[in-house]
Image (cartoon, rainbow, N blue to C red; front, side, top):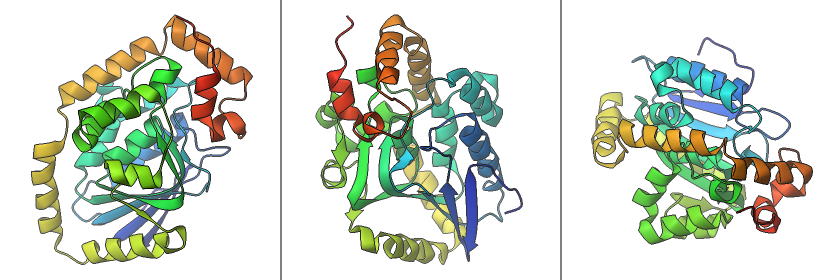
Length: 279
């Protein structure tokens, strides 16, 4: 790897690249993270790039809690640089993650909510700390459906009923329940997670690149949502995130400490249930 990034540190071990997100104070997905991700994806596309990429977070409490709701136009503009103005959305950027000519593995500790969960869902595999991982799609509780692939991936992985449960309740799912529902591949004891993921990544990295990418492409052809489906979800999110109901609910959440390191973000599902109805 040749580039350096503000919010992503990288370490190459053989054919495996470890990419660690670090965007204090709580790893919100904002313009800096999106800009760095666009750059990293560009480096991972050529034939000589690493065969396997492991994504993780430097923050033990937050993988990605969600997007920075104060900077939606800014991060959307950065996302557009990956595919052009017609694809100015996190959903289409994350679709590029799914289509990389490399195997992408997410290693989850802490909270991955909203677009954080959607980034993990765009990765090829997800392994989570049994004790410390939390997943959620809180968007409906805020005032908009998920817009970066969550609806598409969760419906395919969980089935209709469980996807509706995950999306409509905006509840937190611990690693045990997420594994049982199919949101993640496996929940692994925290003390074993690093070695487990490293060993699996090294094993895949030792296999022929052409075989890895051909097999991934064949599975993608069966399982990935179409660009039109991703774009439709993104358009609905971008419409409703500016709506009155969303603005009123987020204003109440900000009064409670939203997007800061405190109870509201640590226990966001509880906070959403406490915000009074606005309809």
